[in-house]
Length: 315
Image (tube, rainbow, N blue to C red; front, side, top):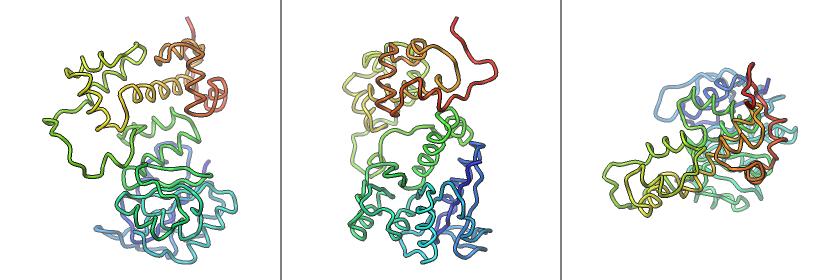
């Protein structure tokens, strides 16, 4: 059982506190404890108090420690000391939203890339010049320390940690139970207010859903544009506005995700995994798996296999 300690640092949003409880509970491989410097009723921003039952001793022996909250304000010295001790002891350290300020105050982000909510990214960079702030990313990992942007990006990060620990199938299950996408492409720039031409209320979501059902086909820009009933030029522009990726980049990400799930849950030969995911050949599958996750398909299957009782076999 992987132990997670979520350290609450007021001021905090109750939604942020609930995220690790929701995601890791859905993954079924984790024991999550919520703690704070002063256990008991804890005020939240714009909502009722929450009761945090445990003190900082809950961090002892945790495999993953998450800093949640602070709003950019100074964290208690005992919290910073506990985070430094956890990091020195080998715990995986992460922050949700403004928790990045807590990690920065502890000196854990010095010389590292990090992110936080886009509205506070400039403040983080100004106050902590030793931190390489990446304002456009949903989450960042540098040297085993993870930081996320605001709100929903914290869900993205927690799902990513599940994926790192137990593979794509486990993360996809947790995402389905939480009714969120398992992987959200693009970055925070999607959410920064920018003047855009009117799109008449349309969305390419139906076309993306259609593409996911036909990943084994050699889909082209013309195929996608035909389904969306628009021109290739308009499709490309709108696709990037909605996902932060070009249509072909998005397809490649989704195909690698499909291949990962097939490697985890079936015993299909590599050429069939490549075919069903739309990556073409076993050589292409290997190239994209190494480029995306740093493992060959064989090594990935050996590390993350979650085969069901009657796995699919070659016929």
